[in-house]
Length: 398
Picture 1 (cartoon, rainbow, N blue to C red):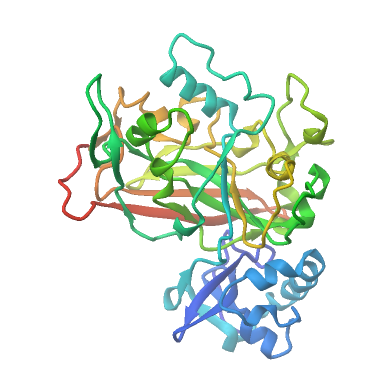
Picture 2: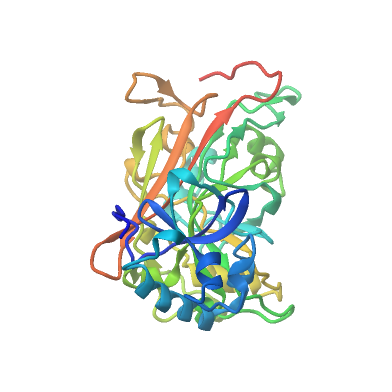
């Protein structure tokens, strides 16, 4: 029997990913420090997913729906206690790749604490929340083609920015930031023109990944008038390499914060539940924040209902993210613009370096844990990225 270190990735977690083995991409589940080859398991008759695990991406399996997801998980729960050694690969011997082909990407803005913090920074002396914020989950449509797997280097974006009252200038962003978020991966599509109600969330959503929605704040401040995020967000969004299935999070659902004023009927959810995920943000190895996902004002089911209420259809591989996760305390914020009070209060890292925003060479890692179905805690796959300078650009200020 192969010895497996399983802390955080036990045989009751079983997150799904895709790894490259001998030059071929193969779906897998993670058990501790090993990947179990699902293509091989299905070929050997150990699991039956109708052939959907033979592709080099998880999309066919995601599209198969909840009945197949449940049947495969039940079989894997039994198989993972004593997995066949020939189907196991050490993680350091394989290369994780983007686990699914991203169809569409939507990013929400669902933390009241984050929205209020930004309102105070960007609109001092005015109400921190805009009038629409408590009536609908605010969001924007992002760029699916620049969603990348954890570990992919992030090239500093360039664009227009304006300082003071002068004309705009072009150059690399000087206020590069992160957004610690939680993403939801859609498996089952929906019909164009048919909204998905809040109580059908689990019929469509397969699982959860951690997300870093990298953000160029100086580009965003100039271009986002009046239409919102564009080049400041579209250059890269990083996600974890392993999707935690909703079934592994059964013990993590908790009551969501109360909503006042009452929401419109299509957003009413009873009971309203969010996920008790404890996030950690590391800046060059230094823990700088611990955002609590349970504090999010808008729930994942409400986000999905709002995304589709106009008749927009879901596609297999759609990814929608929560928006920055921030709690009520200064050490619970999910972005550096909040952490440094708009860049006015630098953060001192463990090596003595001070930062207001990201410098070239900086690495940010977002981690999270959640209550597991076996009474312990599971670890969501981390999302990490290192900032690279744009070609030919001068080194950015710290």
